[in-house]
Image 1 (cartoon, rainbow, N blue to C red):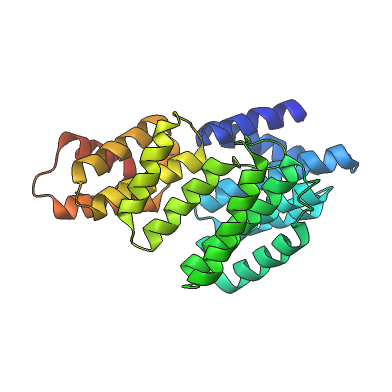
Image 2: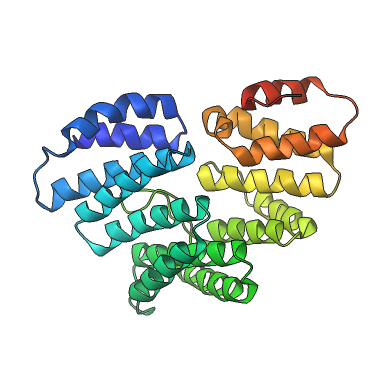
Length: 285
C-alpha cells in the first residue's frame, strides 16, 4: 500500500491526473482494509486527501467533501489533520462558502500557532498554510484588513522557516518564502495591482526556475497581470509555458480559460498559439 501511495502521490505532484486516477482507484478499494494503527491511518488519510484534492479541482465537490471528511477522521495526528483541513478550506472557498471557510481556517490557525523558538519546519508550514487560507478567504470576501494581517503572519512564519520546504507526507504543497510570495501576488491580482504582480514575478524568476502546483497557479496570476497591462502576447506566452509544463492540470483551470477568453476578446487576429491553447483548454474562439 505504501508503494502504491508513493506512486499516486508522484502522479499527483506531477499533474498526471490520468495516471493518478488509474493508480488511486484500486488503492481506495483497499483503504478500509488497512490496519487502524498510526501508520495505517496515516496512509488512509493521505490517500483520501489526495483524492479529495483532485475531486475539488474537477469540481466534484460533493465527492471531494466525502473524501476529505474521511481523511480527517483517519488522521493520526495534528499535522496530518491540518494538511487535510487546508485542502478542505480550499474546497469551501471554491464553493463560495466564505463564512464556513473563514471559521474553519481561523480556528485551526489559532490551534496550530506554535511556540516560535521551538517550532519545527513542519509545524511552521501547517500554521503558515492555515494563515494563507485565512488570507485567501478574507480577500475573496472583501475583508482586506483581516487578509493583510493573516498574510503578514504567514510571511513571518515563512521567514522563520528559512527555506522552501517540498511537498511530502505532511502537506500537498510547498511551503516557505517563495510560496508566500506567490500568495502575495495572488492578493495583488485580486486588488487590481498588476504592476506589483509582475514585479514579484520578475524577482522570483531571478531566483531560478521551479515546478509545482503553486508555481503554476502563480504563473496564471502573471498571465492575468499581463492581460490587465494590455500585454497580450506576453500573457499567451505564459499560458503556453504552463501548458507545456502541466497540460492536464491546465485543462482543468477555469481561471486559464477566462484569461484566454479575455485575450481573444481584445485581439482582432487570433494567432496559431491562441488557437492551440483554445483547443487545449476546450474554449471556443
